[in-house]
Amino acid sequence: MIVISGTITLDPAKADAAHEAIVTLVAATRAEPGNITYEYTRDHADAGYWRVFEEWADQAAVDAHMGAPHMAEFMGAMGGFGIAGVDISTYAVDTKTKFM
Image (cartoon, rainbow, N blue to C red):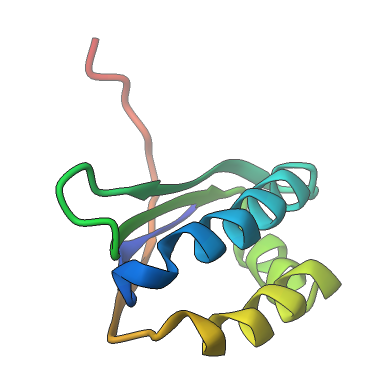
């Protein structure tokens, strides 16, 4: 399994426009083969701070996602959101254990 986790910081004044684009991206991505979890969550105290969390069956699924038309559309829209920072990491995970 591949886990992708991190943060995106953008202009808080553009957070509502980003939210609209993210809702569209998330809906399309969750329907992709190999997607397990796909979340973008906005910080409650800072509208410009978003946490990203994704789980994928394998690297091939991630690669297909990165080449998907809805991802290209989202990446193009990102330029209008005043991106101030991106800190996203990818992890190869051998096992997943439920905590509770």
